[in-house]
Amino acid sequence: MTGSVSLRRSRGTLHIIAALFVLSAVLRTGSQVGAALADEIDTPAPSVTAPAHDTPTAELLEAFRVREARLTEREGQLRDRLQALRVAEVEVTEKLEAMRLAEESLTATIAMAETASSNDLDLLRAVYESMKPKEAAALFQQMPPPFAAGFLGLMNPGAAAAIMAELPPETAYSFSVVLAGRNANAPTR
Image 1 (cartoon, rainbow, N blue to C red):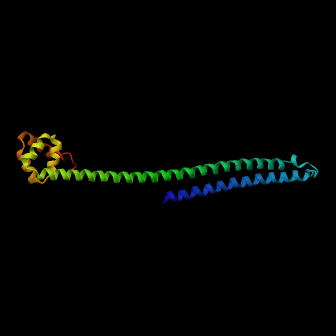
Image 2: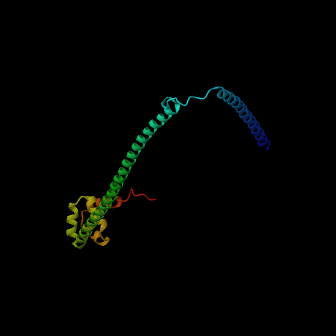
């Protein structure tokens, strides 16, 4: 509570000091205005016949014309820049739309390729499942273990077991290792 009282007192003091500065400025300006009015009364009026181009007003008008010309030129430059920005914005929008369409087309192509690949794998799986286990085992024995294990993983367990039973133990073991390790590094959470 004592802090807020101290803050109010310091604000009051600041207001008093500011008021004194304003009063001082008014007094100084007032004395100069009086002196300027006295000088104006003592000075004779300028002659009416003085040429207009020699007056400060003509110089000011010329300065304003020059400035207006510069501002008009600058305004034209800004208009040109704004138009260039509008053109660039249209081009960027068109390119973004083209990229979006290309992405959609690529996504559709990838989906179609994945579907075709999946269909091919399903067809081969069905072929291997319908073969006699001994004949399929002869083919699987020629395949690299990761490739063969991939097909065995897609097949129904009964057909896969029948083929594995016809394979030499070392080959069947290598396929089993690949099958067991396929998802070993998959995240659990």
